[in-house]
Length: 486
Image 1: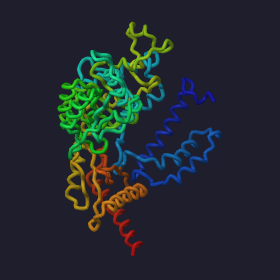
Image 2: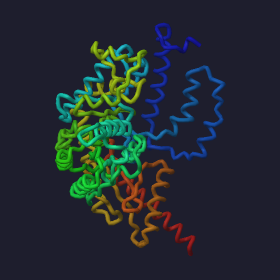
Image 3: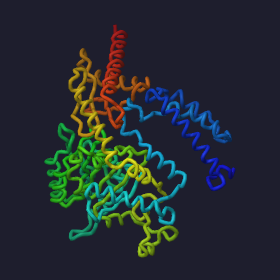
Image 4: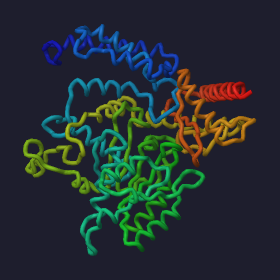
């Protein structure tokens, strides 16, 4: 069994095995003509359940043949131009190369004696991103598994800062409040629960018709907290909401946070691509005033999952995540200026995900990333024009990033419940066909469809074709319903 260990004696075996795997995936990518096969759970699950994991195949080719049937054939391929559903981007080749390198070397980014150069590369990328945001010379941060963890850590730091003893004593957990828009990411409420805060701790601030946080209600809520003896521990502004791609008015929110002395967190997991944009960087104006920022490179920097960071304006606030263990990162290492990333991370063992972004920047440059993201933002404008001009559809809001939320409105149907059902059916039928994948959400209690455009290879013709497919499935269903009723 030692022949399977990766070392100097098995380098050739490693090369052959990985090459065969890469060739299989490359062939699959080249032959993929739709984003999904449409396989149903009931069809695929028995095949996987029948596998006896205690009886290995002992042959790489046989294992890959099996994987083709169990996974590669029916995987959902985000690189296909008609995958239009969630915040999943096609990935750039330099980042995939980085994934291969980091998996083989297998550095752990918790301590210097496990990562050496990897630690310094990650720190340089943190500095680079903080510079792009404009957080200032005292900024710092750390890579995380994704936006949910980044938001959790940012709110942990905000909680600890708000609970510090002051002239009037420390705030109790019951007094703490997080203010976020009604369309902010669900991880805000999830983080509050994990941080020991009750459901009343997250206060939803209404949004306007543009789906951006309204600052007048925010100001009123901050004033109410002051009157009622509550402590706003953070205002969470979103730069790219999951449903609408809307960007909250960051400058105005920053002014209110400064006025009331409240931690400002910006969840830019989606909108972070604007940091590299050649055309639309000004849409993030005000983000430089944040106390913490979430950035997901695996959304709009075209990186493989996972690749995210949480950044802070004041590096000293990261101390709230610091614990020392004699076997790992004893306190004396701080005095010796040994850079242990575990000192500022919620994780201990942690992948060298920073390498993917490093190779991307060193190969393509930030302008190359920004150009790709600008293309999908421009495509979203074209898609909005198509929807706005098409009487078959109701489109919710003109996109700031690359998301379109809309629904099909049958000409002869006025019952909102029937319209809801038709749109739900059309999405399900489209997914089952495998011809395209779209997402769904609710707006004012009604069911809508959603395109999340992150693939520069998608065209306006693709959008038009998928809209026609949606209408086709919806009308077929309506016709069948009428036949059954007659």
